[in-house]
Image 1 (tube, each protein chain N blue to C red):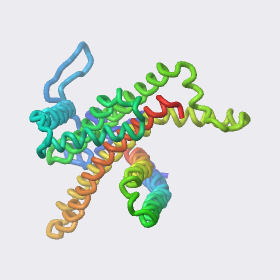
Image 2: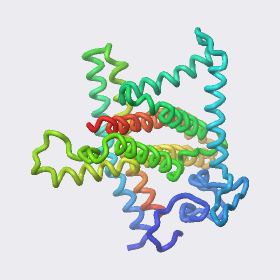
Image 3: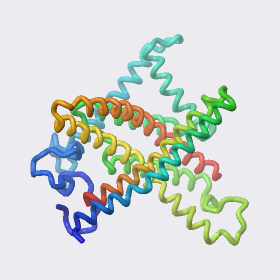
Image 4: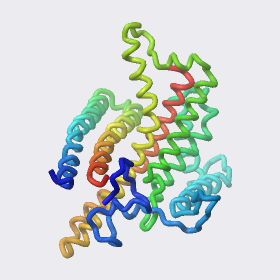
Length: 74
Length: 265
């Protein structure tokens, strides 16, 4: 197989993991909305943890992107 | 394109692989990350030149210093606007340490505060046109993460001595699980500087690369170029949020690691 073709296929395979990231981010914000609905006064308590969780899950998405770049341009 | 070696290809002056199939000398979305020397300094074979990266690190530090020293110069009991902002920044990080590390963590406030302000200002400065994002290079973020990791480990070893290694064996776990659990815990502990640095680096690099790619689309589409411009506006807003969020996440993870080091679960 052509190296270029293999690289493109590899990059495509690398980003399959982003499905899990989408589910994860949705999960975090679903919990946040649920917590806000049950106890609106707790919003300033819960919000920083939500942002931390979101950033940590987003980091996994960027790891996948990094691998895709490494495959494509390495 | 690239060499046959197994080295990790990163953007830099020596590695043309990132130029891809673009003609030599043409701009690519990744050429914004190239380091250019401003004042060449050679320390006996080691290249210690003053580069555009160094320049923007200096600018970030000068900006932080002016912001804080200038803000607090009046020392009013009822703060004006600038002093309020400086006190806000202080209180934000102090609150983070108080909530996540406890009173023993107050000794580390200068370090954590400097870390937070430097990363925040470095990220935000990269958003200005024609500027350079210092934190979009893995070596910079790795240096910061390595300092955090080594510092936290040294603090833990100094405080707890050899009892530090009980950290890898969570309490309440049956002894039979230990051969499986301890290596996993050790690997995840050693992965901390890697994930800490990679998270900040990947966020910054990906955001700026996307902005440049859409910038290319604007030129490509000519008359219909207003559509990518709209996307760039939205992406830019996202980039501002990501810049602040990543500084916050780096700092809060530092606080959490400090808490682990000081209190061993």
